[in-house]
Length: 480
Image 1 (cartoon, rainbow, N blue to C red):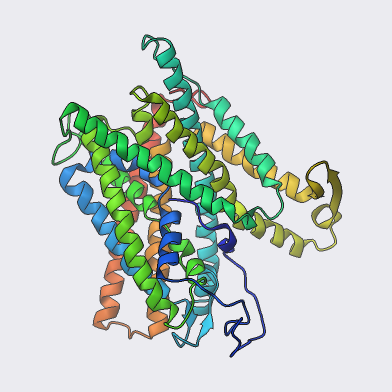
Image 2: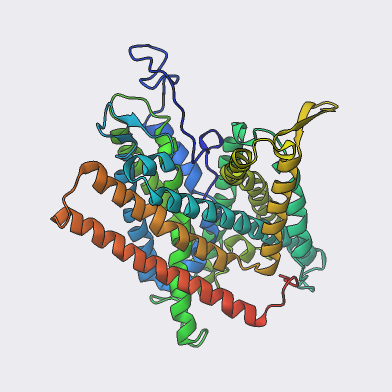
């Protein structure tokens, strides 16, 4: 999953504005005229989706094999496309053309479902963001270690395996995030999306290119129809790994959280829902093609030995400098992506604290500091303490559980059913007033139920993976 657009990162923001209907400069809600099209929305979605999730697809394909691997990717792409069209119909409450706009995913849940489900939605979102912060810390450290090992390996003329402890790199990443977390209005840095897009496509394309190059170089397409064979793993491991692979693929397709925010950039007429359906079709088809290529070429290159992170598998191959560039691109991407993703969580905690303790100087007071070459900086003590504690917490958990694949699978499982399937289905049923027990209602509920079963299986597989890894792993002593 890639980096979401910074200017659209506000899960729980409602703005009351005076309508300026009839104005050439403003839309019906009083905001500046939206100018987005099918192509800009498609570009936003592709930028948001293609990210670090692509790195685990070769491993996921290896667990499932040449038949089930691509089939599952196609299945997830279909479900994601269909539920995204349902979600796009919920951008406006009531009339699809003139109804009240919902600016965020949470706004849509509040308008259509309300009550306790809004709190559940918020909890799942923030839990997912917390998990993403951990996953990004692990992924960035793995890439930094891969660069170090690759250079060490070639300097020693391939004689030293160069095992490297990942903890110092996680700590370094955490220190950088503590510094970046204190930047005011980080979510308004528009150029982050451009950097994220360039970095995502850089490392994804290099991974794809290296996979193709290795297959062409060896002249052999590795892998089997059923995936990693019994013997290389036990029957129980085969089952759990197959379930975990579902979570990895689900994580790669996760973007429902930001679909409403992207839709809020689209102009009308035609209705925003029609535009987004076309944009979703274009972007999901493009993303699926790219994912199929990356997953399949990675599996063809490595077979049963496909690594959990595709680029680490190429670490000892030439041109090693190209692999270093790809891993550096991952680190650059994730340093910014970490902050962009957790901004809503920062904002939620700080807003809640301000409302609970309105008279607290510790929470509300800003200390103005003049920084040379930067200007005036507002230091808030609560922000300093809370964000620092948050980063330290995610870093420590990452050091305790540095299992990239397991964490990615669990994140995919936690986010897929509730955010990609359940809430869009329930909101669509409510929005369109679909009668209970009607054919369409039964079909939608069947889809939701089937995806719930997949989510439970994926979560179970990821948890089993963590338990298995913990049997041989000593906390704070991870090395690659």
